[in-house]
Amino acid sequence: MTKHQLPEVLAPAGSLDKLKIAVLYGANAVYVGGQKFGLRTAADNFTLDELREGMNFAHERGTQVYVVLNSFLHDKDLEEVPEFVKFLEEIGTDAVIVSDLGVVKTVRAHSKIPVHISTQASTLNSESARIWKEAGATRIVLGREVSVKEAGKIKREVDIEIEMFIHGSMCMAYSGHCVISNFTQGRDSNRGGCAHSCRFEYSLEGLDTPEKKKAYFMSSKDLEGLRVLPAFIEEKIDSLKIEGRMKSHLYAGTMSKVYSEALKYYAEHGDFLSDDLINWEAELSKVSHRTYTEASLVEKAGADSIFNERENASDGEWQMVGSVIDANPKSGIVIEVRNAFNQGDELEIIPFKGPAIKVVANEIMDLAMKAVTRTRPTTLVRLPFVEGVSSMHLVRQRGKA
Ligand code: SF4
Image 1 (cartoon, protein in one colour):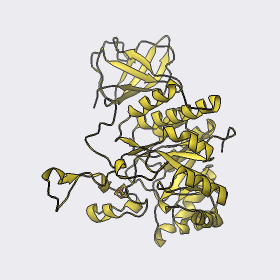
Image 2 (cartoon, protein in one colour; image 1 turned 180 degrees about the vertical axis):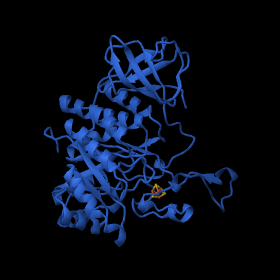
Image 3 (cartoon, protein in one colour; image 1 turned 90 degrees about the vertical axis):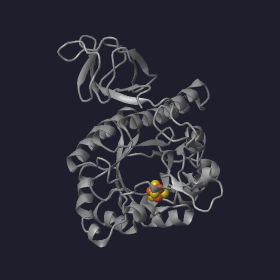
Image 4 (tube, protein in one colour; image 1 turned 45 degrees about the vertical axis):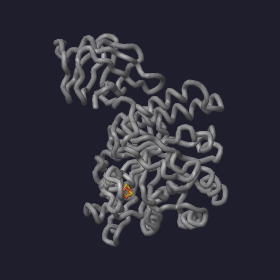
């Protein structure tokens, strides 16, 4: 727990850029994957140099870094773990996230890095948590099927750090126990290759009504636990995890900002009342997502947590158009463009703290101070200076699906 007894906000960092964004937007900890042993083979996993740089960047700002080693490994994979673990210890890794008992033993034999048990291990009860503790784990990332109340009981009974998912995509199966992707796509979900087969539309055979023949019947809505924050605090949950190492820079920044601001507000006021709650929810809806659900955080998830494609999810398809790489009153704001915007477009620049800064791009220049009417991705453009804007701020725009 942090000193004010609030849970940490643990954000996903699928790349070095995203790590920096999550840290600057307020995450207390980030989790990253190296080139091997993680469950996101399609993420821009960190090279050894990037791990070192990311670790330094985060630690200089008081943010912890956890590295995932949560694949289920065969004997030949295990042989390579000790060398990687020694490197992680040397660069100051704050914890490793592990699913497999053999990996726990190997990490413990070759380092003193704290071990967190991944949600892939599907820990749902006190006895399992106790066994992991006896094996040397310091924290359990509980399965998403556990309610906050049950989690509090496990924490009290076992006296171990507890981490729970608060936001992001859901697995329809017990995590770590699904092989649909293996069989349908030849991609091993327990070795980082999940094709998210549960989110596809499927045809149902044997139903009478033709309109029911196709459905997303295995696809879950996305988890969102903003209104459950008081329960997490009451049950003394140590860490609130945001899913999504594969998700966008805008996602990493927005989630880190919203959840850390909400917790800070609680620390100051002792509640989450006021318009701020509405504003935080509005921010969460500006990031691409399926309809939100609290899943099993309060009551057991049922049919209403299955995604229905007719339900509208995101608020108007906001999109990141770029990030600020320089801002000063003399030379203006320099934006690295990711998605094109035009002269006259309304933009929102997201500061690390406080509400978004609205800007109309009436005057766009290139770096040679030539007027631009339509920007192009990967170029640098200049806008007039606006108070409150600084380097690394993200820029978004509505209606750019
Ligand atoms: S296919 Fe769906 S349920 Fe299965 S592992 Fe992948 S995300 Fe989870």
